[in-house]
Image 1 (tube, rainbow over the protein chains, first blue to last red):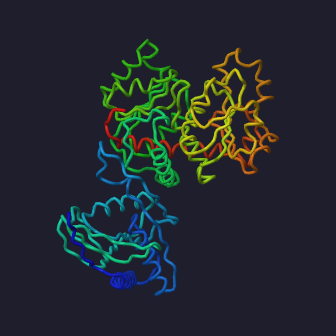
Image 2 (image 1 turned 30 degrees about the vertical axis):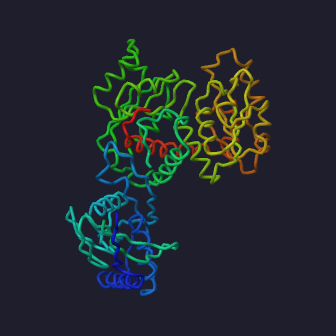
Image 3 (image 1 turned 45 degrees about the vertical axis):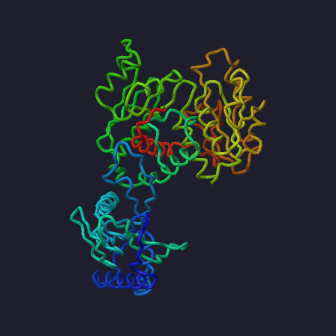
Length: 179
Length: 311
């Protein structure tokens, strides 16, 4: 079966988008005070690290980074399909009273974000939750929206968006696959 | 490929990959047990019945906590206070419970094979919490998780298991599981409590003395001397057992310097294990218990997702 693959964002494009998102986060939140980043496994974790690096470069301060695995909070756990393996959730700081920036690679139906918020709330009561995504591909099934978007890419349901990372977990490109 | 069994009846029926999947999931679920809110919504609305025909505090509590942390509803049936006292058979008990639509039955029974008997006759999932002298898969898994946490890989490791091997389902599950993971098991115990042909179950060497078994070992696992089972026929006295097969500091010195001392519990202090060893720096007994909840959460999680394929 032939698949058509187009590059939506190349290496440079990804870097610029992340830099812009970092600036937007700082602008909207007036600095890094009480700010924490939580990446959604697995793609979001690497992007959260990238954002933390940039925030540190710009403001000279380290923003805490955590990761959340949403497998146990999914709404599609059926009775007769094998359960997905569970990844590690590591939030080595309190979220109580913090401004949490949830980070994911691709925003699609919004169900992953819903699950991530439930997981986050089980760790404490944040002051607020904002959402940063590299790509918003549309087709929301829940009333969820991103605060910071790298790029909006309208897609059809038959298409797939993939974010590729290299061996050191740096994002290298975003591709659109038709099938 | 995920976990595709309807039941977990024993480690002898699982592949190395399936065991690793259960252990990896358990490792990643551990974090939930340290949170303020120790709950995830995964098994919300599922009903888990603990059907215990034998006394147990540790295992039953552990399964109950595991189920509750996954948001499931739990029901405990212990034989001593149920209709079993009125003569109800295992099958009737199960059929009656099944009519109330449980999702998972966790069963501990004195007869080997009872869990499989139930598993074949019902659409609910069955988890074996210990059947006769056959298997105790959750104990085997939590033992291996504890070892893996400290040792990394279990490949090529030497694990000594000492005690009444004949009556030990813990020993058997560990033999099956550890063999699949590439470890070597050295058994020691009184000849009256060492079953013929036990070497055939896996990568096993039967040693004449505890010193031989423990020599250079990475792990020493002591089994409880089961006074309710042996009665008076299999050993002359507790004191003699303790003298020949009890674990004390001198014997621990024969193993590797950072050897792990483990025990499935409950311990008979001063009989099979001295207090200073049980409470000493080599002891991983409390880590075993902590890992027990995570392992059981992993088992409940994966078995509730498995296909309804018959074994």
